[in-house]
Amino acid sequence: MKRRALPLFLMLLLPAAAGADAYRTAAAKLAGGLPAAGKVCVLPFLYIGAGPGSRGGAVVSERLSTELIKQGRLKVLERALIAKVLGELKLKSGATPDEAQAKKAARLLGADYAVTGSLFKKTGGALEFNARAIEVVTGEVKAAVKADIGEDWVEKFPETAGEGAGGEAFALCRSGIQALDDREFAKAADWFTKAIAADENGACGVNIPGLAYLGRAKAYKQKSGPLDAADEEFLGAPAGYTMKDQGSIDGEAAENARQLARYSALIKAMPDNAAAYFERGVILANTKRYREARKDLDAAIRLEPREPKYYEARGYALAALGLADNALLDFDAAVKLDPGYASVYNARGNIYGGTGQCGKALPNFARAIALSPGEALYYLNRARCFLILKKYEAALKDCDKALALDPGFVEAYYRRGYVLIGLGQYDKAIKSFDKALELKPGNEQLLAARTEAADRKSGKFAKYDSDEKKGRGLLNAGGN
Image 1 (cartoon, rainbow, N blue to C red):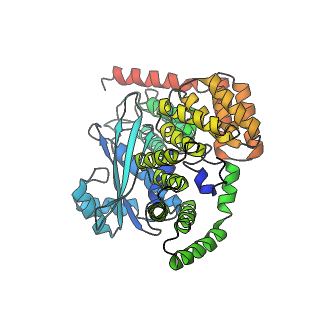
Image 2 (cartoon, rainbow, N blue to C red; image 1 turned 180 degrees about the vertical axis):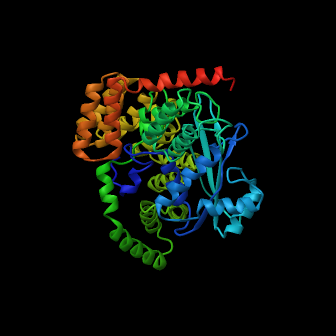
Image 3 (cartoon, rainbow, N blue to C red; image 1 turned 30 degrees about the horizontal axis):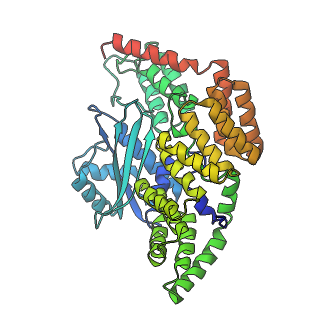
């Protein structure tokens, strides 16, 4: 069954590979589930299983707050103001309020919504964080999201230097820790290097030998994106659209506004018109107004429950809101109504692949490719799963197929470069990143990837392993 090309939003699921970031993706999903200009406070997260003095919950909260501000859709309250109110509730700024305290803090701040959540360490060392946006008045969860992140911060650091310890090393380490918190990893590595020069034991002026080495190791780890850490920074999120498509999305703002007005008028005149709700829902989702999009798509399905594309569209909106399980139910409904719906199999594969469930993702990608062998995007997304599984030859074959179908596919060159890094073919990886940069000059993620390939070739990132070992050795020898 050949179907017409769907609106651009229906090609999406998660941000494109280049530039993908777990915090940015989470912020976009939360913002998409809330009304524009809503007033939001982001509270410290609960770090389950962390010891006393852990900074993790506060660091993750701060990063998410920063990304929400960058989204530009919400009014995000300043951290200093939140800390003041938490202090009035006799909670330190890094402490985690319980549900009642969270609601009280949000009310005192005059916030419409409170963003709170938790993080915990999974088997293998990765951290999972869960965030939810709660309407203060009703207590209703308006949006939720979860993602895997790395513990790329220093967990504990005293407020003042230890007795008799060097103030210079302490100040340098504090600067390094702040740079880690801000995810400025090159700066962090430089600060910790200076701290080690000031105190060769890396004690940071707090009598904890090896701490500066461990801090620098974290900075190097994030810069190098080691192959055994299957995080979004290294692999890139499952791709739903290409960089060249982004220009079309950005350039459609005026047309979207006109079409919204048109379909709103049509719905007012014909409230039983399922297609009008669908079209308006797609436009709303295309402008990241996912909560409103969901309502329109609910209406379309209620009026016409046997149209598979309506379920597909709502599935994407639900996925964007962080409701992956609900999205899967809609995708299942779509393929039940139309077993030949290739893009929905790709969407299901993306949801599974985005959570590392490649055993479930791969059959869906295979089905999508069998139904639509000329779609480059499906090969690229399957390549991501092969990369997670370290099946580099299979991943390389899929990247090459994607590029044969679409020679201008920037993300395919990006992912191919990392596959080649996995194979230890650094010169070829550099050439792949260079090709991507020809198509997208000056892109920061691509430049960083190329630098990484060159640094791996030179052995620069071997410092990560040596710092980790030295830091642990000094720490253990000091009895910490």
